Amino acid sequence: MASDAVTRRPGYDFPWLPRIPFAFDFLFGRRRSFARDSALVMAKNPYPRRFEGFEQLPQASSFVIVMNHYTRPGLHPYHCAMAASAAAAGQRPGQPELSWLLTSEWYGARFGPVPISVWLTRWAFRRIARIYGLVVLPRREELVVARASSLRRVLSILAKRPIGLMPEGVGWGHLIEPSQGSGLLLAMLSGRGYPIFPLAIFEEDSTLVLRLGRPLRLSTPRDISRDESDRIAREQTMVGIGHLLPRGYWGAYAAAIEGSLSEEGAAPE
Image (cartoon, rainbow, N blue to C red; front, side, top):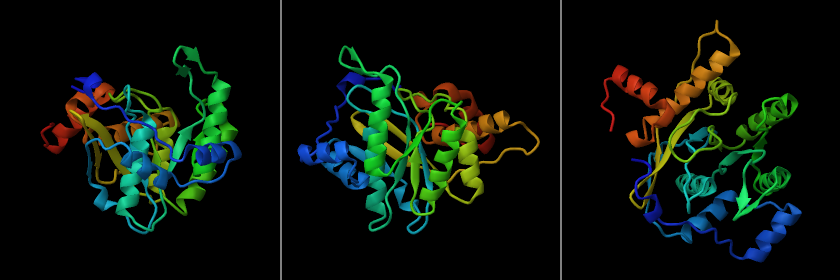
């Protein structure tokens, strides 16, 4: 199961070296390479990791990596994003690095027993996005203008380099329903010809596994509502990721994944 022996798994550190230059860059918004810093963090965390399927990434064209949101005490989503960025950069030397889509705010954040205000997380996320060239996506659906601006920025970035995102936004490992609108975004990008690579991240005992699958084919019927198109595209995406995960991680999409595998005549792990 996905939650077995969580407390016995290694804890990842965040060893910025040197710390003073990073703090300076953070405060003043100076650009840094996320892939280079990712490689540094991974090197300072010599725990077992296994990368599968990254050799299929295009060498000279843009693409989209869509990854499940995996976290636990001692291992956070940014560690997972860094592991994926380091793996992609290692497979594509000299090519543009991944640019991640980042949520605009974090509710319920705490520093030990002290709650962290939402406005502070908004400021920090925007600062991180600035120094690494990431894209901030408004979390609240009513921010239509901001979302449209973010979409234009996504397309602008994809013209130059690949992007990565975690459509669930939150979660602890078991698949959950992604944020509304993420399906429409991914279906639109797929329709424009960008390969959508599902990436499953999970742990086998103390080994962090990153398993990249073949590009997804996202398609929805034309004569349905936007909400239904969004739901179908989200399900197609999560089922694609679920195909790469052990059964214990299937969560809310267990029935859909089981049905998909049955239709394909494949036996689930």
